[in-house]
Amino acid sequence: MYDILLMIHFLSLGAGLGISLTMFVLGLQAGKIPPAEFGPMMGRIGLAMKNVAIAGIALLVLSGIGLVLVERSMVEQGGSFFHAKLVFVAGVVIAFTVVQVNQARARRGENPPGAGRRAMIAGRFALASAVIATILAVMAFG
Ligand code: HEM
Image (tube, rainbow, N blue to C red; front, side, top):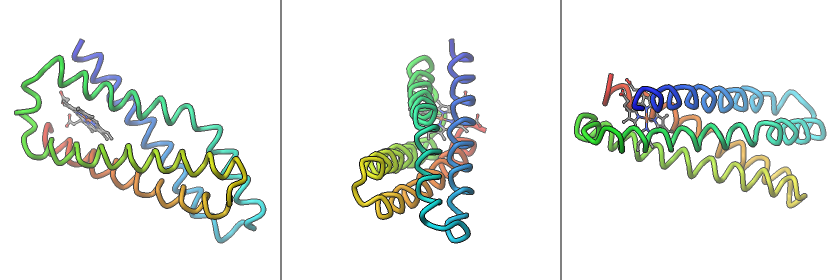
């Protein structure tokens, strides 16, 4: 059971980081593509990736919780690095929620440029938090 949860943990981590990094690299094109094209383009891609991203982050957190429930000693083994990692996990979840809320606002036509910009900035926070959480996880368990 533990191994299956760990496989899910790694696979969902790969999916989440992959999507985050892709959105980040696409966001770097902001100055090079006319805003009238860039906004709708990012909106379409964000919508297409939405369900995969939600599933990825949900599976990542749920499999992590499952790992701890199946093997309680992991909390003690991970020590303070593990606790620090959980702070950044919370950061990922909050930043990801901000991304989704702002993307939904942009789709509803509520100040799309402003909402799109906020979604992009929150997406960068989510990516940075996920990278830090990964580094802390390896320091805790590697
Ligand atoms: C953004 C969310 C998360 C990220 C990026 C993440 C990342 C990672 C990574 C990279 C590892 C492998 C470390 C290694 O084996 O060296 C790991 C392992 C682990 N994670 Fe997570 N994790 C996340 C969420 C969670 C949550 C919410 C929990 C529990 C509440 C959790 C519990 C664990 C445990 C217990 C392990 C040890 C597995 C083992 O090596 O046997 N993770 N995590």
